[in-house]
Image (cartoon, rainbow, N blue to C red):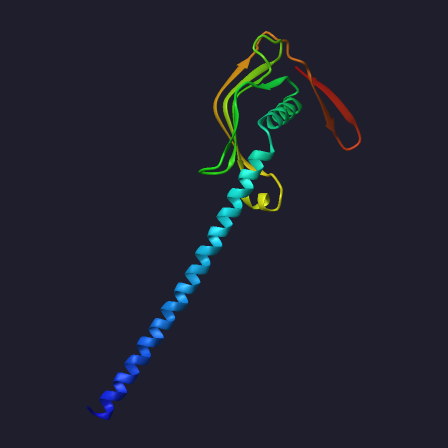
Length: 168
């Protein structure tokens, strides 16, 4: 065996060792990345589970009723179930919501089949409950044409004078 051949063998062994070292470093990075993602998934899952166990459906039902009544200025009620949804996106699913009543003398009544509030995950990790999407599936709107319309009062502002108009 010549000196050149043994130097080539040594260089080859050095390249093989460097390759194995690089592969080991890449595998170490991937292990850390997978472990970090796994910890994040476990923490998120435990947070959602804790939230679903700590907040009762009746509390959410009362809150939704109050907020819908405040927004629409009409009676509202949740007639169906309230459940937590984890996959594909975490959120709260509410079924059978009635806003006003078709027998009532209101201008309109609204019936929702399914209402889904999708939850943002990042504020949840900071202890805040933030919904970023509202999905409505199956709705009916009843418009009462027999109710006299109330005049809409507008105020037209000009440079020096105020003018009020009534629209009907």
